[in-house]
Image: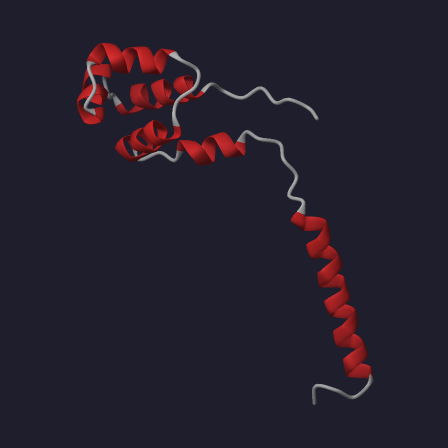
Length: 102
């Protein structure tokens, strides 16, 4: 298993806040937290999912999707899906040759 270098969530949030010109104090007010608590939360490279959902709504950015996009996970369904698609195509051809589906 290879580990990916993921951008820490606090960096993503702070970057978006800067882009949207949202100050720490404005974010604190929207989160109903003190400025100090907000600053401390955004210093950490991790965050609770419920808080991330709240911040995502405030900034109108899906940080969950951004984080998921940084993961290098193959979809285990794809190989099986390909096999089933091939089988389905073959069966349709056989049914057609046998005179079915008229």
